[in-house]
Every structure is written in C-alpha cells, then in structure tokens.
Image (tube, rainbow over all chains, first blue to last red; front, top):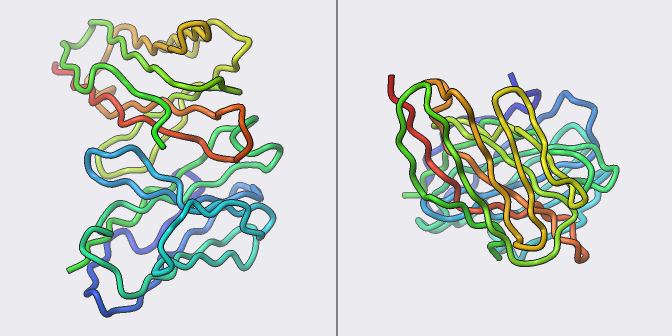
Length: 116
Length: 112
C-alpha cells in the first residue's frame, strides 16, 4: 500500500450531519495535506499542516474543519455540507524539508464523499 | 488557481505504442512533478524534474522540461494495458506558498 491510509473509503451523509474523515501516515513524514478532487476540475489544495501547525488554508469554507493532533494523523471534520461538496477527498504527506519544493507527495486512496 | 494544463485531455492507444502527454504552465517554477491515478485510487508520484533540468528518465518514462516555453512532456514507451490511468502534472511555483498545483489531467486508455 501507499503508507497513507484514509478512512472511511466511502461516506454518504445528509446536509445536517456531522462526520469526520481520518488520515494516518506511516512514512515518518511531518507535513500533511488535504486535497479535494471534483469531477472535471483540477485537484484543489485545501489545507497544509507542517509539524502539526496549519501553514496554509486555501480559502476553504468553515464547514470544513481540519485537525492535526500529531504528525501521523490528520482529520477533516465536516458539518452542514452542501451537495456540491460531494467529491473525492485525498490526504497526502511529505517530508517537510521545504515540502513539495524538494519532495513528492504520497497520497492515500481517498474518501469518496456523497452529500445528499 | 490552475497552473498546469495537460494536453490532450484523453488519449487512446494500442499496447506497444508510445504515449505522449504535454503540460503547460503559467508562472516560473521550482520543480514540476508527474503523477498517475488509477480509477478510484489515490495519486502515485512518477517523476520530479527541477527547473534546472531538461530531461529525466525512469524505466519506460521520459520527462522533458522546457522552461522557456513553460512546458513539459511525459513519454511512456512500449505502453501496456496496466498503464491505463489518468496522468497529472503538478508544479511548485517559485512564489511564496507551499502549494503543489495540479492540472486537470490526461486520461490514457491502452487497449490490448
């Protein structure tokens, strides 16, 4: 496998639900990322964490709330989502020696989210 | 904002043929990376080429970079059915920020 594990693989939720996506990496990396992949759109960077501190927030709506309790785990808490938030949510990790300026990203297999 | 743009959007070839995908980008870059994504899976890194490099090889993959034209190409030689996937270029712009910015990808179908 990739060394980056995402759970659940599939999630269906109503607009009033609260759910969380989980990501765990076993690569010893200290930077973690959330990307959103929608049909016919480029991957969109949502959040970047380095050494458990958020270093980038790409104008993401507040209904998405990230949490990085340690360098191996990353969560994305979801509440009051909209149908247009349905997408594949991908987690990635990398060493933090300049992030992707020096190292490629390692992706998990994603969580397919459907908002009904 | 979108930085890289792949061309063509879709490509269908026979096994054994070569596949060439192109990527154009807008701003100066630190490096350019190519990734592959099989259906329903995450992205897998293929090659990273730095702005001071012109060509890189990895197995059946050959990547070129022309910073004067702001373009890159990915060549897969002697393609196999297992190469069927979407291929994305991603750039790290030189300006401040940590983003790896992806294009929309090229969908490659290799039939046997």
